Every structure is written in C-alpha cells, then in structure tokens.
Length: 452
Ligand SMILES: [Zn+2]
Ligand SMILES: [Zn+2]
Picture 1 (spheres, rainbow, N blue to C red):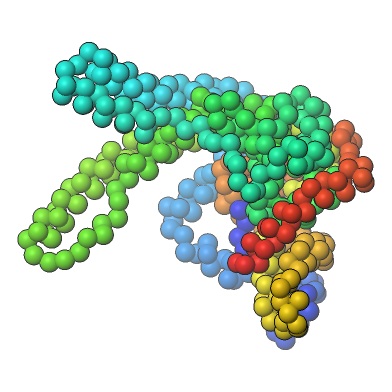
Picture 2 (picture 1 turned 180 degrees about the vertical axis):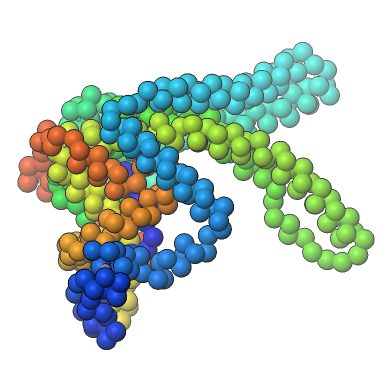
C-alpha cells in the first residue's frame, strides 16, 4: 500500500510533555485560534500558519532550484492525472503501456542476443571463440531478467501455520476475482505491499506489523483488499515483461556504475593507477548512462498508468472493506512517522528499568508492550493534528514516491465515489485466530524494533 513518504512527524515526543512557555495562543498571521494541545505542533487551521514547522521546512530549503522545479512539475502531472481519473478519463493509459512495452523489447532483445551469440560461438567456434562464447554466456547470465525469489526467511508465514490469515486473504482474493496469495511475509515496516516473483509468478503479500497493529479489523481488510487488488488492477509494472525489464535495467546500471576509488599512495605507480581509474570510471559512467536513461524513461511512461492502477486498487479495497474503512486505513498511513516516537520512548524506558532478581533478568523485558502503546499513542492523536498531517501531505504531495499517488488525492477520490458497504468482514473469533497466528511475529518484530 501505500507508504506516504512523509517527512518526520512532529507528533508528540511524549503525551506528558510540558506546555511550551512561548506557545502562541492565537495565530501570529491572522489572529485565529491555534491548536491548544501542547503535545502537538501549534498551527492555525484558518491560514495554515506553521503547518510545516521550521525544522521540517528547513529540509525543503536545502533543495536545489532544479530539484524543486522537477518536483513541482511532477506534482502538476499528478494533479492532472487525478482530475482525469476523477472524470473517468483513462484513455492515455493504454498508449503509455504500449510505449513502455515496446521499450522493454530491446532490453530483453539484448539479453537474448548475447545468450544466442554465446551459444553459437560455443557450438560452432574453435577454442579461442569458445572461450569468448563462455565469457559471453557469463555476461548473459549477469544480464538475465530478474524475476525475484519466493522469500523463505523467519518473516514468512506458511499456509499451514496461519490458516486464519490465509483464509481471510483468500476470501478477499475471491471477492476481487484474484488468485489466492502464494506467500505472506510479516515485516517491521509501517506499510504493506504485494509482489509477484519467480518463474511460477508466486504472489507474495508483505504485511508490515506496525501498520497492521495500528488498524482495526475493517481497515486491515481494506489494506488486504488494496494489495491483493494489485493482481487484478491492470498494473503492468509488476508483470513479467515490463517488471523484469525494469529490474534488468536497474541491475545493468548497478553493474556498469563506476566504483568508488579506494586506492591511495604516492609515486608514478599511484599516478598511473589514478589516471587508469579516471579513464575507466569515465568510460563506465558513459556506459551506465544508457540503462539509467532507459530506466528513467520506462519509469516515466509507467508511473502515470501505475498511479491510475493505484487509484483502481483503492477503489477495489473500498469494495471489499467499505469506503469508510479504506479511507480510515489511508488516513492511518499518515501517522506512520509517529510510530518511531513510541519505539524510541519504550526503548529508553526499558533500558532505564532496574533489573529486579535473576528470574526477571532471564525473562527480559516484555517487548510486546510496544503494540498496545503504539495503538494508544496513535489513538491519542487528536483530530486537529490529524488534519494538520493531512494538509501537510497535500502540501508535500510532490514528495510522495512515484509509485503511489499522494495520500490526500487518494482520499479525495474515494470521497468522490458513492460510499460502498463492506463485502468481506471478519468475525471476532477469526480476528482472534489471526492475532494468535501473528503472536510470534509480534514478539520477533518488537524485539527488532526495540533493539534499534
Ligand atoms: Zn498499491
Ligand atoms: Zn492564521
């Protein structure tokens, strides 16, 4: 889903933070009332004074005019696309997909040509040509399309281990007409995502536990709905043809990118080495530009259609879990940075606790306290601060990663559509079974986060 790459939240450092002596009671710009809650940023909803506090705005100031102009242009493109989608016009998508698919052809053709030449030399050549063929075969192996691997680590939940969670995901998939999820991973991110990997194109759903814990059952179904909808929303970026071409280009760029010069020393040898490095790096720089530019072009062509697919996935998520739950899940995403505050606070608290007795020391602190504290912290964020985060997301819309439209536009599109009821719901005993399946991961991930 949807990580709204927002700047760090100024959500409360501590719910019991003392009120600041110099906190204004009224807006210095328009004299309107400011948020009176001392735990949160003082800002004015009427004129948006201090919507983005000075320390966050300083990050913007550090950007070059070129970067700012590029971001503005991207924001305008995003806004135009929103208007088109809201008006039901999606005619340019097909043209973009066709252009991107055509551009992927030479990428795959290069790999096939190198592999073909290697085989031809190995079969028909003399010894030196066969050596060259073996070398080309190695190059073809390096250039091969990357399909990704089915994960197998401790963060993977197998079907047998989590029948309730898979069952819920299966019901969501059935509602959307999508194939059942192949694997589910549970990670420490405040996010969720869907990938299709391997030759057998296994779908891998990644659920970030901090996000999952911050949501209620309806909102969780909305997140599952959005992610599983990626299999049926026409998002070709994740497909075999385009997805593997883009990953191949990114890999080619990494292969060709000049390395950092690490050698030092003095004398003629060092000087010759320096010149050699310089010429080599200049050559590699030129070579690496080609995959880099091709990647940027493919990304640009697919970003637009990809964003349309994201809006469609939001709509499908709303169809599964209700428009209300889908909107609430999106709003929760804006609170992601506040989770860092809870983690830091609990980490400091655990470290400062006295160890009483050998039994306690052996058991260690109960790291799963993190989850109720996280929920309480997010629930305590008042509507005015939530409103500030939403408006800040609107102002920082250009800063959102290109794969997803800005959160405020996604919310706006859901608000324009007729509200839908939930098609899939979760009974209390099913929710309890899912929670029990996730219990070991709750401990594992809390331990990781609190270890910092
Ligand atoms: Zn998505
Ligand atoms: Zn004001």
